[in-house]
Amino acid sequence: MSDPSYTPPKVWTWEPGNGGRFANINRPIAGPTHDKPLPVGEHPLQLHSLATPNGVKVTIMLEELLASGIAGAEYDAWLINIMEGDQFGSGFVEANPNSKIPALMDHSVTPPQRVFESGSILMYLAEKFNAFIPDTPAGRTECFNWLFWQMGSGPILGGGFGHFYAYAPEKYEYPINRFTMEVKRQLDVLDRHLADNTYLCGDTYSIADMAVWPWYGWLVQNKVYDAAEFLEADGYTHVLRWANAIAERPAVKRGVKVNRTWGEPDEQQPERHNASDLD
Image (cartoon, rainbow, N blue to C red):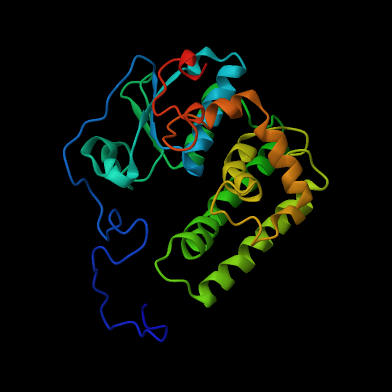
């Protein structure tokens, strides 16, 4: 175990493979590691992703658009195996120089438009198809309030709490306590708001719900980090009500399967190229 009284050196030096679940894919430099162009399917929208909470945001959005009768949202979803380093292929880095899933290429425009960062993809699709953003200025602003709340809060949950509680090679009290306190505060923010609102934007289901649900909905449903008991998640009754309601939406049930390679066989659809793939 590392010395808990560790003093940072004058100049930090990277030590590859320094422990932890993701040590073999983390590095302090950007850019591709190998030449690998992205495949292109028959549909205008080409998604390159994995069914992590960030990836699921986009597949839920696409399936919700299709369920609303928007045929232009038909898409191909290609698997990016982040544990194998697919995100560092040359084609993926061209689509997202930050080498993080998800990345979307829209071939309905010339030249094809790249869209990266899950929140940006949700906004791009919502504006492209005029769907899942409230119509009024006040509603639109509230939607973006919660969308960007998730963008800012999510790293505390994932890279903070999730890393130190579930993935770090050593368990230290201070970081776990620090991030647990903040995640519980975030859950309380959501719970107080959802006490008076069906969805994050009142009665309107929106991209804000699609962004927040795969992180905080799954957290209280014990589908990430196996931490629901530790966090006393059953006490956030309004978040649980909201999370369970969204989980029952048919498009959500379809979206969470896409680019998934773990769990029960009927929960997995590593690639998706037609609606029939999810039947």
